[in-house]
Length: 197
Image (cartoon, rainbow, N blue to C red):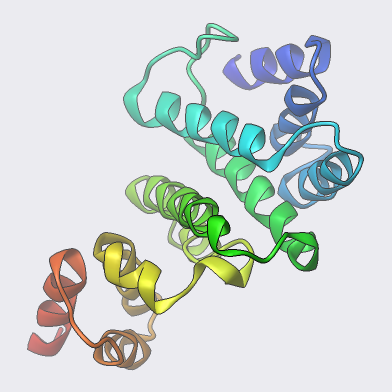
């Protein structure tokens, strides 16, 4: 029922962004199809990636907190929220070479990383490990810097935990050992991994 409402809302809405979100949750569409739609809309200047990320955050918040979306009045299903967030991140990866390169983009890239973290957290929390693995480092490579990981140790720890739970424990340990300094969740995950299974 919720999926039908969201798809109906997206299809009947007045915004192309809502329509792209509807593609992401539609059985006939999905994350990949929505990503190409969002990328095409962005290239046509129909809406910005900031707007797409804002809506993806709203969907993820609705799913995590069980609160209705202000715009649609329904609670978003977890799988729908992560599918749409993944589509936004994938669309940015499709457009990777077309972003401006200057220092002011740092905050934008941190937002992109934050969306990947929130989406992966949601999938991981819901027990969808394979999906979480596709989300935890999704999007353009520009956000995945040492500076980002240093300032976002919870995301770094989540990425390592997902690797370990996916049977790639040695890779998870090597990932965390490569950091100059570990803190927060990254340090906690590293400590658990070093204690063994």
